[in-house]
Amino acid sequence: MTTILRQQEFQTLVDQHKKILYKVCNSYCRNREDREDLAQEIVVQLWRSFESFDERARFSTWMYRIALNVAISAYRRESARTRYILSDEGQLLNAIDEKTHQSDEIQALHQAIAALDPLDKALILLYLDGNSYQDIAAVLGISETNVATKISRMKQRMRQEFSGSAQA
Image 1 (cartoon, rainbow, N blue to C red):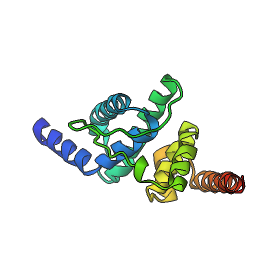
Image 2: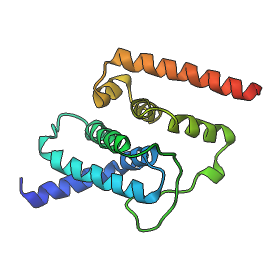
Image 3: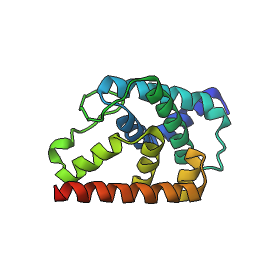
Image 4: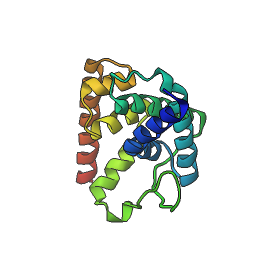
């Protein structure tokens, strides 16, 4: 396949799955500039790895794996970050400032997710996006049993936190 056709195929696939970029960058970065930088790092790594993409696999699973690996590496290089959304026209990741339209419960959930360590944050992001345990395991490189156990423990911990804050 010619380079131009390969580039077009890559661009089409990334465009079809750009919500993955948004979700990962939004989960690991606190401001627009950091999200932009991370998105660019992810796209560069996706392009560098595209030749090794096995087309028998789902592109979204492969993209999640690379995006999360890049995000976790970047997260570890930087100081702890908090999550918030800023809207900015003309940027790679256009976002809507949803906080003003979210219930207190949703905002509390976002805060709880932001406080998770990078692996658990990736896990819950994939889970909330509706991925199967098998897909989550493939993206994160852990067993399905480990995925199920971690999700169960996070749910239990969040239930306790939310019930404790509701009683206070």
